[in-house]
Image (tube, rainbow, N blue to C red):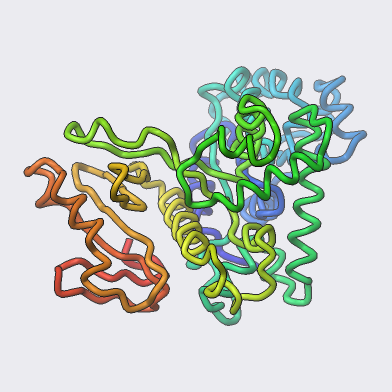
Length: 389
């Protein structure tokens, strides 16, 4: 089954205006499949193959001669030395657009090489799991709780017979063995596994590295290093706080979110979609889902604004999105029929804004409801499909 990815138009446009492009993202989200589908005229080679990776790293000139452009190179991070030779090949004719399409799952190592060798020559994009909008191309759109439990890996939706728990368990084990060993010299993978599970328990919470390190039994510096690896490989995300001039004394720490809700549910040992709402972390799971949908949708649409959260230590608004002078503030609410009392945080947020900003501020509650409707307070209840963005 093929899913129409929202980022496709951006990729095709970049291939018509730039010599090369880079598509990064976690493993198994469909990077190479998307590039091969959008650019069928390009040759394809993966550096997951040890012989190909060795040739690309040790003899880049011979590699490029055996794989002429236009070319898709998958897992480019396994041959960082190749990037310098790609620069030379590109500079021979900068107006031959779309010649090299690169993809990789270790964005930290990959982007360091790209910034050093291909700056100004490449367009960079991020691909992640399927959004609810993209899942509409499936034979039947799944319920929101099924989507949360399965997560966004395309293979799970394309092959319904795959065991969801087994897929997630294998993904975690493979990620630990491959990516972590490459990026970190972790002496005890069991500690890192516990660290990932501790992060899952803290999804949708303000990050406290000292508490996280203490619970796992590692040093705060190690916790920071490991968290950086999870963030670089797009397994977790940090949402930074938003503040106006009037609220400079607010929370400075970011909030931690797991990247894929399916992996999150697996790490929390939730065995079925119907078990989510009764789970002790149900509210955090729903907020994590809303964050993922907002972040992916805004990125896929190339929105220029930035997503943040707001807190004054007593009250908190889950998501603030500022664009073109207009402020959108959203709270994630687990129940489908919220009352006016559920809008207290949003109304307080509006009151602390400068007077000029209040008139252009749009407030909303994001719920599992399929439809949007207004509350008497004038704040909108927003449906889970994000069609209102």
